[in-house]
Length: 275
Image (cartoon, rainbow, N blue to C red; front, side, top):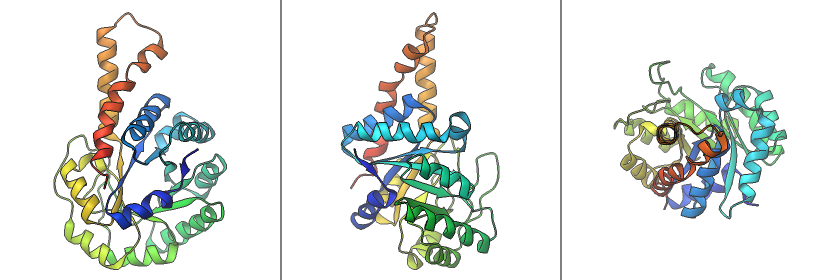
């Protein structure tokens, strides 16, 4: 079994100048495709279950599924709770076998975000599990607006919470369907000058591949969350199957035929972040 914590994969990434993809999973077929892509590339991967996935399927099933996938390959696989919103969310993930949890208190006042994140980080570490926190607020395309991370607040947050990785807001946006050059490098440099822990970019689908490559090699950003571009790829593959085989009704046959296309899409995404 190659079950790994976030610390296991991000510590060498920070030291050696590369990043690891945190891929947003919505079901068995896409999670398996992402894991196969990582095995073929010989690279670690972070399988993530976010709020939408957890509303669709119980956390216990996600934990078992990620564990099964980790056992099937030789590369490190992190099972990660994405955007947990409470201690109860994170405790349930730990009980289900997750090796990493993210508590998202970014909408809270700073003091409350620090206090709650620190409590969850302590709980996670006691269980041998990593913890990611977020400071600043990463907004959504056509939705809530971002609030950039303040470097001094980030330094205090990292020190007082004891987290293993820190998600920051430097112009990245969730759910972008198009890539936009323009992350705030000055803000990033100011954060890096005050913080030593691995940094995380949510909304990585909106960041051009060349910029991801550059940041992976030249900054403390060690994790890019990739969701929208992979979901778009899955949707396109599914549409192709249905248009080519309109009479097919067996869901296993239909969904199974999306897997190779998704593996092919995922491999260069992972490869672009490698050392």
